[in-house]
Length: 152
Image (tube, rainbow, N blue to C red; front, side, top):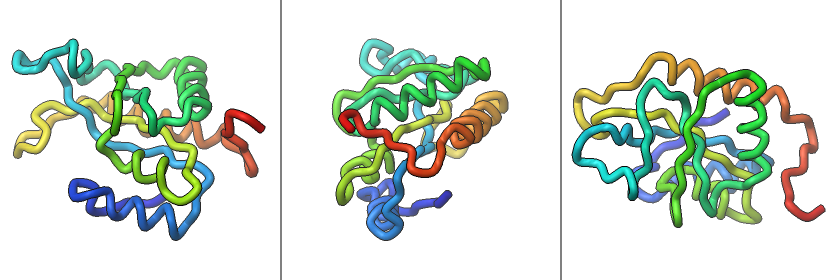
């Protein structure tokens, strides 16, 4: 488990971590916008809301076998979750892990957040606990040598 720096200025920390540690798996966490405020276009940004569970991302940097494992665990453990799609970049460290060196099987679990990048950022306590529980329960499923490749 690592923490990365410089995500906002080019994913520099995650890139360095990925190249140095050469992980087999990266489950990244970040925040995503709660889109319930009037200024959000839900057709463009999705319909995310605080209190409805962690947000699981679908996109080019997300390895589908990892995502499937996360969804299976969430369903089995009855952890509520939301889905978010991105057409290109996630804008998070997930991109850096997925595309560095030989590539790392990666997924993104986000915490819905109101008022991002302000002094009054707000999350729901249940979402925080569910993000933690989901990551923990997923990690219990990963065995040494687990192979997430599509074609083996």
